Image (tube, rainbow, N blue to C red; front, side, top):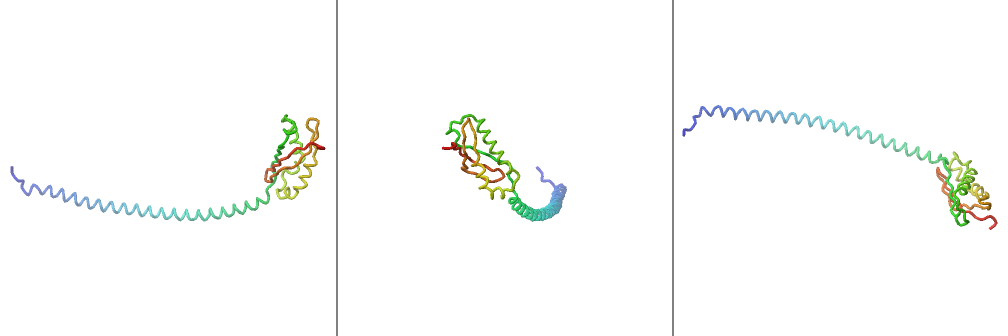
Length: 169
């Protein structure tokens, strides 16, 4: 076997030198493109951070205004519904739900003036409402019953829990 001559390796040297120069140029091109891309990303992140900060400030302003409006509206709440519960009707042997429903509707009809009234006004007249309910006499199954207010809750729905009492007993 013969050792190849030096002039045949010239082509290989040129190939390797070209590859090395190409590698260096491509590396520099990569660094330039990567740097430009990172610069654009950094600028975009700064812009987004600035927008986020502005939105946070706007959100805080909106939340403060919302809280103030809620405080104002809390004082202006009105009665929208009245719920009546009669809790001890089974004690007196009243088994038909129609009679209980009719009794509840009579009481709701008496209290219908409370609808759309300011909650503060309704609460301030709670004793008058209590007297109105307790002075009411109900006729269920040919018996007369009186009512006693057990519990009540005032909000947009006034929830009143009543006890029946046999009239004269």
